[in-house]
Picture 1 (cartoon, rainbow over the protein chains, first blue to last red):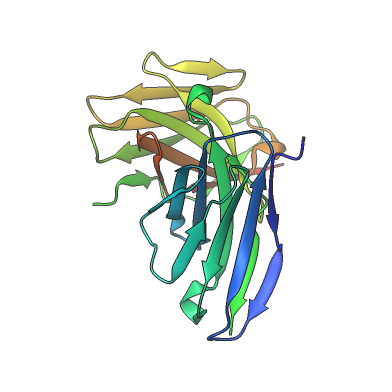
Picture 2: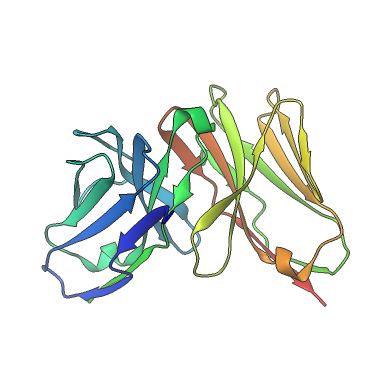
Length: 113
Length: 109
């Protein structure tokens, strides 16, 4: 059981470039989330999804887009990267019947120069 | 006021010490509560859920005071391996989780 996986693990982008972060979970969870973590600020919710084909904005959605075409995958896109998007990105999934325990992926460290 | 606030830390304690972390939340409609542990450069992992009656898991005890909107985590007999950042997490409804900034603990030999 792989749990939650994220690709890539590391990436360096130049300002204005685009990229997609992939999150995959094999636990058949309905809910999936994308967070960013910056020093001293804790995790902040970017976007989330409560099921295949549905997405919603979180606390800090600007500059990001997401898609959930398959239940097991949740993609986070940066259309035009900015230095302010330098961060560690975590994906998580959960299921209401599991008391909403969130399972996190190992994270993606993104640097935008 | 931030939605979830925690002791700023860091806490530096000797092995065997008892240490307590505090967390307050601003939304009285919050439904469920958790403590997560995050090791350096790793992902957060659930330490324990926090129930209204309080709950214990080995050396760890969590308490919830809904009237004061306050959550605590007590670690007894600290081990070197307890060194990590402890995150207080509040669930407002279903999909809406709010994380505190975390409190870093260093257990010293």
